[in-house]
Image 1 (tube, rainbow, N blue to C red):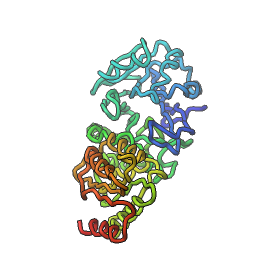
Image 2: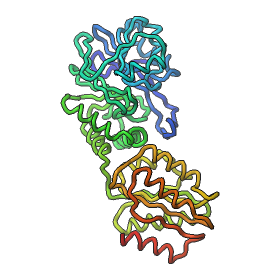
Image 3: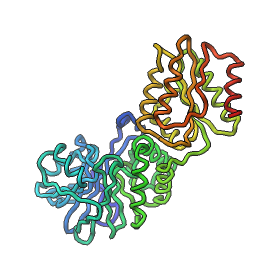
Image 4: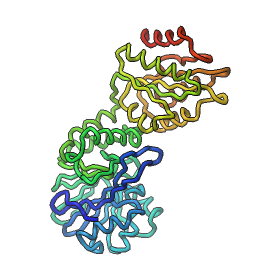
Length: 388
């Protein structure tokens, strides 16, 4: 387990989690990494750590460069355990090290995680001299925890961004120009959609804080380091945080005896006839985190469910719960509910209510069809969409 030098005297000492496939309900098909960085200067500084179950790996990478006992400072950009979990192990090797965390929430909460250690709080505008280099602290609260912050090194023009600009992407390559760009950007989009969409306002605030600093490298907490495509990822964060959408549609559904599926196919084709590109997702076959990635940048959303036991299909209910939590509130996002039913038909109204709660504007009144849709009923759906 060797460290990787990302700039003279600065090393990636993180770990690669090749087997991670689920992160709090978000499917991570390409694994992930927990990135940590070691700066060799007059004061040897470690920025972030890793999950506790990878503590031996991070210690081995650090040990490939120095004796861990020589670490003077540990910067905790974010308390979540995938970034901070190895702090107790590292502190056993360097008991005189000082841990820096964001005020007030990091300083208030870190003892609850790791007990009585040497903590020091930092706030916006604070800086720390480590020798030839300086570290400046940029709080970014709720991106995506109250304690989250960036650390910036002006001499090297490196932004240590923790969860900002990250991706769940396991790779032996460390930089954006060493991997397929379209795959990398998709994973960055999926990460934003499933973790940061709720915090668009905070993401905009974080981006504004970066306007006055010169960034030549973004050393993320997960995935790949940005050095050649910084402008592209920053511009995409701007678009995503401002809720920019394209004139496209996503149709999401579950079905029991294919009646709601017939409606979903008709709706998808009707959007296409209106020159609105559309994608259709059966919730039995597609993971909600992949669907959310599509919804992030699409204007239209149609959600369908048959009625079972007087309510929504469990798969659709789970999807709507996940969507509501991410709360893509924007008056320009348009949605509607549809579905077939045998007798009660309550599910379609419940789907519509959930779409409202998630922040969508209802574009069409709920579409309900009893039993198997007839040709005429399907033609009426097409007419509704074409004439809206």
